[in-house]
Amino acid sequence: MTAQFPDEFLLEGQAYTLAGINGGPLFDPQTVGLNPLPTCTACWRGYVCIYSLDHDQFILTELQVAHGKLVAGSRPFELEPGPIINGVAPQPHPDSNSVFNNLYQNLNLPIPFDGGLLLADGFIRELYVHMGFHPAWKYRTVIELIFETGRLHEQRNVSDEVALLREKMTSQPMEPGTKADRSDIEAWVEATFRRNYFLPHVRHH
Image 1 (cartoon, rainbow, N blue to C red):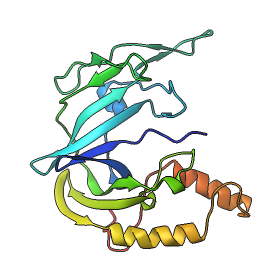
Image 2: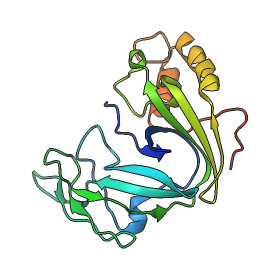
Image 3: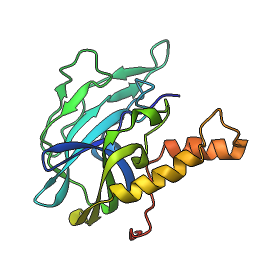
């Protein structure tokens, strides 16, 4: 299995990894006519989003997606140009080596998200695992954003709380190769492929 390409969030001019999600919805490609394809083991979803704020409104700013259809024969899929989204037509990806064939920029698509996000920076290389999405506790700086119907309600730095979680997680490793039983390992694998999080003070929606 392979570590996955994360989504990003631009906040106050800085790019953060989107490392925790509590609530929803986030962007769903199928609602706008996209059919993402898993062209790379590092992106089974077939797309990557860059989110940001526009006057406290949660928006999708940029989207990279491998769009197309499944076909029979030796080629499992056929890539195609994507549809127009929020008045924006896709461009061919400028990187010829990219696993994505469509690039949407300046989308400004509102996301009616309810709940919390953890934005992370300063990944701790010693905690790298070649699997899934890296959780927020593997980063030194973590910012929490709370939204109500897509509007920013609260922003706070939770790096100290996440550091306590990191201490707990690293003192009880659950990665393959440890003495954890099979159910523990399965739970750990499942957790790496979702980005849900829990902090005691967060309101759940």
